[in-house]
Length: 342
Image 1 (tube, helix red, strand yellow):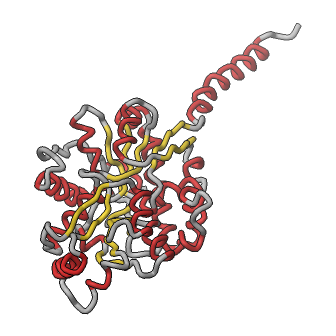
Image 2 (cartoon, rainbow, N blue to C red):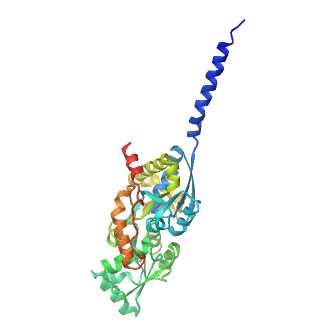
Image 3 (cartoon, helix red, strand yellow):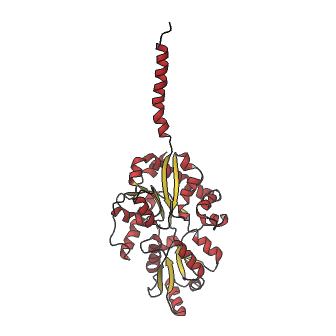
């Protein structure tokens, strides 16, 4: 009679193998990552990382939701609708004061905001005239201050425009009027001549100059606010605590995307077009926007900490914030440091 021991041993070995394999299979299941994003060139690294398949390759299952503004996205983050925030840094420090645990794990771009002048205002900046003098001359001729479009008070576009006007250009406040409106409305207003100038970013800069070459770039991002923090990647604290590996993988994918954007923007452009185009913008426009003066990509979150503090201090001075908001805990560079160490 055949001994049952070999059969039992075989069954036991198979059972142990299944038990050991089960956790490994669970670990390889894609991790859902719900990403909220504002559709601007500054967010290109996340679009490229997704388009190249690097997020999926890293074990993530990303889904994207588009927002018009950072504050709206903060509400979605707080309600648990999204896990990752890709937009301007300005609303995040304020969010933390409302007990919303969001952490900046990466930057994507800096010095995005530039100032353009429409056909009526642009000629006054020619012939070496100072910026303040240009606004004064415009008012003298038109009988009114120049109307300048930007996003609402407290936003990065608004803050950088006011900083440039009053601190850099030294314009008289009687000669320039800041008008708040949405991103799309700003682009349409400068094209329609409803405003005389605007603070915009890519791809709006390339679009408006392409449609009307008389719209002139007057100040780049560095002049408006040196090292101005632009689009960042924020992660909801509870999500980061549950999925530290996923966050590190996200940051590593952004680093790869940053490299591609700087080395081969033509290859990266179709992914950005797919996210931003919506049948309105063509590939040539996106390619030009990716290499414009308003497209400065960087992933290192440490590079914008000092500028974020400076911008917040200026927001207090213009009444956009009641007081400085502590930035302790807002920036978490550990994921970036681990990613570049590999």
